[in-house]
Length: 332
Image 1 (cartoon, one colour):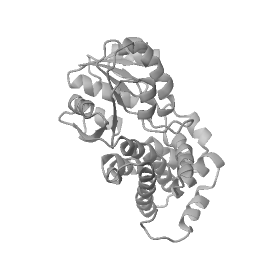
Image 2 (cartoon, helix red, strand yellow):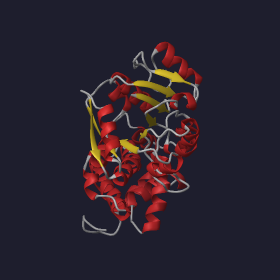
Image 3 (cartoon, rainbow, N blue to C red):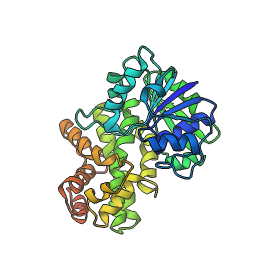
Image 4 (cartoon, rainbow, N blue to C red):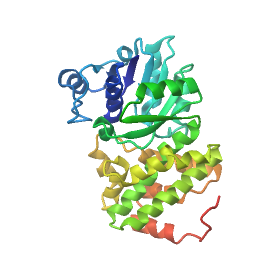
């Protein structure tokens, strides 16, 4: 199968390499000329996946049009805030072709509150969209550590095609038709991971991390249910699984950002030093706005948003969470 990959960050490069390993013909678009050169000449992405030897068959190009030309399947790997602009460019390169689109992005569009699948439905009409999500660090997949993910789509044939294209001895893909639940789990867990990182940065131990994971899952599930997602989805790989990984793993960008916040650094200083995107920063504000529109209470998300954008002291935020009105564990 001919596959075009749009975006050569760590995750886009990893999935491109996985598909090459599975025998597909893969062409990846990178914005940076040095990434194009390093993939083609050194078989390594020196900026985003340093130290990982890539399949010799993986070819990098400098234009979106060249990457998508003749593709039977596309992998959309742009950050969520850039999906609309990037895939509008993809549409121009596709012409009348309608390949299956795999999206790796996790987040909500700040201006519209739309999920990535909704954006893709507007920018790439007629293309079957499959969301690939679940607990996965790019470097561990690149090192061929056993990993399980979910392909979610309203088009079962497309989900099955992605499942077959991606699965192998170290990468197992399940299917789901709950696109809404899978996308919300993947986006909102990043906000809770920032909270978990803040607690770790403050040196508060294991108890608060466990509380944040479980109560974070509760508020993600509340918002999901209000929007019409299947609550069972949040007990699976793209709910609890992704949440545990992102809140505990040292490779988590969102958790590490939270750690630095807990240690007293400002958001501006942290972001100024980072090349990679911590999606939870933008998602916190967007998710809180969405929750307020629906009348859904998300206390952890609210406190993370105040720490990020209002400069609230993290210790004060934790105290405010602990001193809230007492409730039953299960409430709406």
